[in-house]
Picture 1 (cartoon, rainbow, N blue to C red):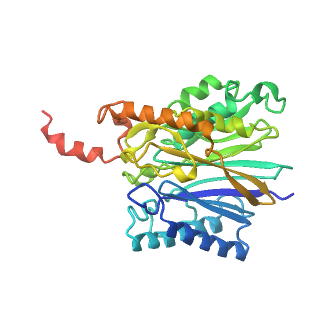
Picture 2 (cartoon, rainbow, N blue to C red):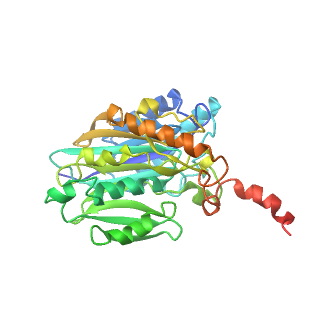
Picture 3 (cartoon, rainbow, N blue to C red):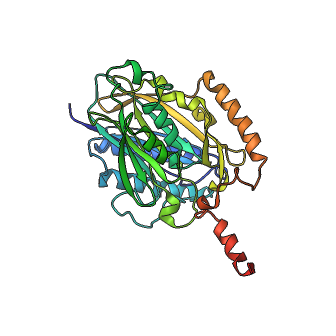
Length: 362
């Protein structure tokens, strides 16, 4: 069987209202464009959704990763949808499009992108995660728990196909360098890095045979732009079952609303709340940060689904806890630890305020 490529490409091209959600006209236009591309044979299949004010494109095709044709199609779609956003006067229309012209690949141009290529197994469950009001490091903790923590993933102990562990590709986003670390052998070294989730980001995970298991978007739009233009709102794909973690093991880390960077103006720590798509409309202090999970069965490149995996009452307690944490941390107002430390505020609007005060220091 020929290998297939799955691409998840996203962009914030205009919020409705403010930064809270996505206007239906944007989703409709995106689906029309992708349907035309499917009829032309560029795509095998597609699915369009949103998390908060981010437009998420799920694409299957035979063009391989980093395909100029696929990326140009996505870029042109974002440009066209931005025009719809401008007509509606949506907030921040086109804010993730950092260039006036396509340069061959959406990576480095503002939109987020995660891609993987593999040969379909007899059964191919895959979960697509999308986040709003946070940064790519938000996936560090769940990826560690899914692929390296036996208290989360019992398959690491009792499944002989998983017992050898996994390999993590970790990206230093400031040096643009990657290190490969193995679990369980390098767990302490791995934690040393990925615990600093705004500096070191898990880019992908493989089994010890080199088969791709998970991939994330690692684009830091503020580093690309050199100024604050919004949080990155990353995406992640995880393959499940048959020698990889089970669906329930992949979802289990999100039963804890752990703290992530982002929230209001990209400048605060907040609880990561797992929600259904219908509740992916962050409003309280532009948050708290949200994560959705859509499950698909892949069949010859066709997306069978989705199942809205967090539309499940077993996550009600996590949502309740997230609101309790939000109440607590919000009471700190502009003080740390609610506000990010200065080292993480370099690409927010704070430096403009500090610059006004520099001559007053004596």
